[in-house]
Image (tube, rainbow, N blue to C red; front, side, top):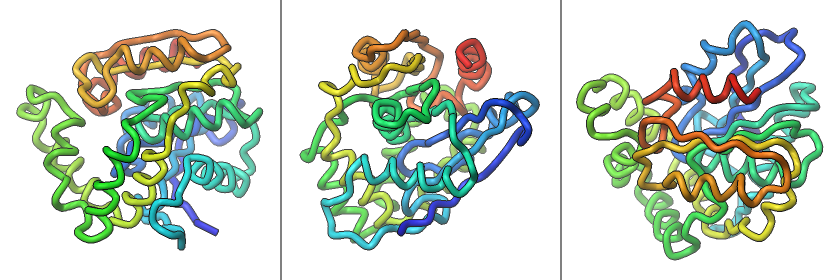
Length: 254
C-alpha cells in the first residue's frame, strides 16, 4: 500500500473541507497562497502524489499505473484523516485525478479543475518522459518544466519563486514522476466527463501553453452538472503567479 504525505491547514472545525491536488513534479507548497487565503473558513488538506514531497512510490511494473490508482491513493489518505465529504481542487495531474474522483466518488461535493485536461497527449508524450526520469531523475527536465509553469515576465521579476519551484521539481523522485507519467499516458476522460454531476469550476491561465483556456473549459462543458469557467493571468501554475485572481475565483465558487 502506497503511503502519501500531506499537509493540513486552516480551521479543523470548519464545516467544509478542501482537498488540494497539485501538478506533476510539485509539492503541497504550490498551494501556499491558498492556505493563507482560506485559513479562517475552511479545513484544507493538500496531498503529495506518489514519489512527490516525500510520498512513497508504489512497487509496480513500468507502464502500469492508472489514474484510478492515483485517485485511490487520495481516498485512502482521506480515510485516515476521517474526511468524508469534500471539495476537490486539482491542478494539471491533480486536475485529472480530481476529474476521476468527481465522476466516481459521491464524497466529492464540488470540483475545481485548474490548468488541466481530459486528455494529455497519450503515450507518445508521456512514455518517453517516464523512461527518462526512471533513469536520470528530474534534472534533465527541470528547465523545461519550470519554463511552462510561469510566464517569462513573472519569472524575470520573481526569481525567488522560480528558484523555489525548481527545488520543488528536483525534489521529485524519478520513479514517482514516471509512475504519474504512466497514468497520464493512459488518461483519456473525454467520453466520461458526463459522469461528473457535481458543480464544477474550471480555472485556466491565459498564457498557459500546456493546457490553454479552451482545453480547460471543455471539461466543464462536458460535465453534466452546472459549470463556471474563469481565466486568470499567468501560465500553468496561477496559484503562485496570480494568487489574488485565483483565490477570488475559488472563493466565489466554494
